Length: 169
Length: 385
Image (cartoon, rainbow over all chains, first blue to last red; front, top):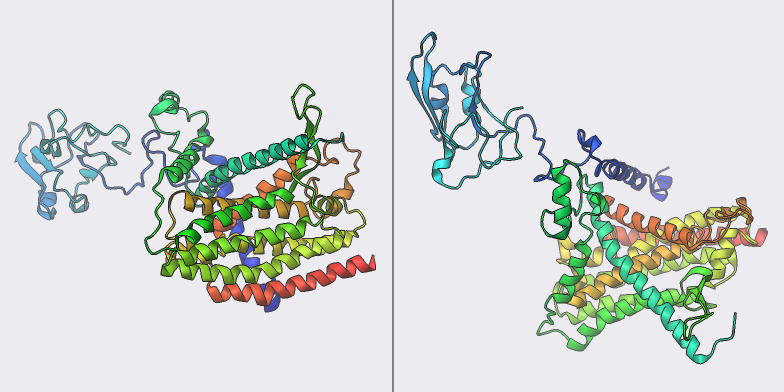
């Protein structure tokens, strides 16, 4: 029996079947626009075709808003305390008709951020996420200090150089 | 066929040689491109797409428009095809370095031997057994003459091809020795041992069709095997086993994976061509891919039915009166050649390299006894029926 197993290359045929199946899959789906939803190949034609990211991808920090368009953050400062590089600065404030404290300023210094997602994990109110933007290059250092308002420094808007990354998923 | 004058014979021979050379110089770059794409697809990526797939240049204008409309570019499967032009340009323009301590004359001679041995084999290979087309009468010298599908019709073609193709190893060994460096020398020694070991089962497996058909002429052998003229139908069994053994030995002869010990990247830098650069390296490269085409032509002609559709002598199932499928065609021949070339790439993307002792084990303990038994069976079938 072991003689026959050595003589007839079952394992080689098995290996060829596996690779052949992958070849067929990629060959018949590589250049079709229609079946782009479930690609057989893992590499992506990035600048032309928008990239599909994994759901747990860690991109730029963003504040979330609830159904009324109110910022969910209540200024508990958990994220500011846990941040290993201290890139988050929150200024507490009050707002008319809101019981909880309201962040007047929420500054995020992206140039020192290590994208560890500790802030999101520590947040008890699910009010911040790291979104799916990955094109974060800037032309000067000021581009990296993000806040809640301002042109090009607004963390609610997509990154100024990011034309292909997705803001919210 | 009209009798030809000396001038006509010479001109026709030259034309056929040029045609075969053009075939080689078209097929080899396309094969390198196919290698990139096939291995890419097997490894679940796209392979080369960027040479004509970018957003600059002439093709870029077309691509920009297509991408802007949200469509894939028209020639999307051919994106990256110009990469083979870039390959050739790089090899030609690169500086040709000869190491100071190298043996200059042998160092230069080695790639030439390799490439001559690879090209010379084509003089006995018949791509089509008859006339491909006839020149119209208005041509000055060759008017009215037939253009055959082969360069020369050698009676002992198989012997000639086997002899010439084993000269190729001299190129590798001499180049490795002349480099005056450790890694090439080791690669060359391995290559010599490997090719001598695998030359035996290769030749023995080729004896199976020779015994079954009773001819050494490339064209006759192929036609007799595929049409099954004076061959019993049981002959398909030794032919099939012979095909498997022949392809295995063909991989070893052309130094392809899983038998690429002479140029094992992980152990020997690049093996015998470590010290080579520029067009001298290009010649080794050309020789390797030409040898792949030669092996494919052989397997196609002797085992897979050659110019006829069905392999292993099964062509007798289709009567010759059937218009296209029953007739010999150059298309069938090249279809099989491409299939074997694809198998080369497929196996390269699948199997890892053998260890040196495993290589010798497979060669001497398994393949040679197997081919001997196979040859005996073929002889029995030939004798009994």
